[in-house]
Image (cartoon, rainbow over all chains, first blue to last red; front, side, top):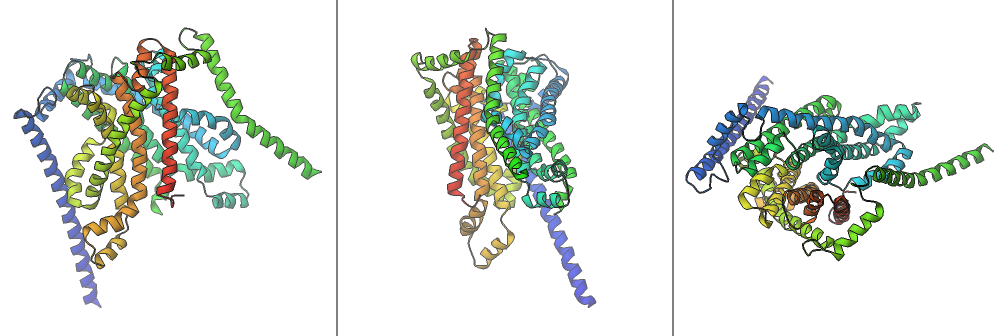
Length: 277
Length: 262
């Protein structure tokens, strides 16, 4: 039935075209919305509806951005230096907390003795937001890189342990029994069944804790720092420079989104087996 | 004989397991006491902590006792979250349901979303001062994001077949939303509400630490600036207890409203 086949092919083509059109329409609408948003913002500032003392116009922001690439005024560092300072601290804390926290959580979830021993301490630490630790940490470690890395470490560490723990606890009993039936030792089952099974949950947790690390860092830098994006924000506020403040916010947002994107990419690579089924 | 040995072993194991949590807590206490002897001028002793906690009642800070400060913070969170839930669910449904709204308002939301709520503090304070309004706006920003994300995510989980069935029976948009979409999306929305509570609690602390006279977060900064570490630690303990109670209550509540979620 070549006639029928042709019809199907035509239908499929039409469907694909329709899909493509819809995608285009979506992109155009999104672009239009952003444009309208920026124009309204600009107009609101120019017309004086919103004071430029609290909200600078988008064009001013672009100028500040270009200026800040080379200028160290007003917080003593260029934008690049601030970004590097913040990234260095956030990543140091995050990586350390992941390297130590994830294995600990996995072991706690698998071995009952470890759970009983370390569990209560985490139950105590869990409800305290990392920001609340800032004063104590600053008293012990000062306001340098080390202190902030410790604050980030604390926050991420607790949430990583809990996520890894919950993830591995969810391992289906059946899978464990199958592994045991085939003669796997407890450790082998842990490595080959438990850990892979907890991966999806673990990645979800990592993404959340990366976000919280980034936001805790901003708080830490706002409260006590000499460099970094949070410090830039705080100085911008003290000097009444909303353009510096918004530039800082946008940079923080963009970097956060990029880091989240990288982690999602790693997740996709790691968990291809999970996405397939 | 062999079996007996085995039973003995398992009893010993049980006793060890039962003792481990206490051992861990004991170690924590010993470690803290060791830290106190190393830094006697910085860290308060256990009794010092207790006395400081009592003195927040006998000599209230700003004429408000410890519980009053906690309640002030909680009130800020609650007011802001009511707005955040109402707005977040409506907005989330709108951008989850309509492609055009998602392309327009959703895109603008996506641009703003990655900025952590704490990074909004300077801007909001510049615009609204350090009063109640700015704190409520900040908690709103923190709380609304997870609610919007989870609402639109939940709506996307609704199976297409259900919607087709609705169309077949000529349901209008309102009926579709209330009778097909919302019940499916509800557990996800509730998860968003749960996240919004813990985010709200963190954000209010940060906002109070950056500038405020009352509220549990302001006590942390106050103790910090005065070198009164006992007050800082008492406040941290309070913050932890409230955080624990909040998550406990939400757990119970979730069992009631979404019993099918385990």
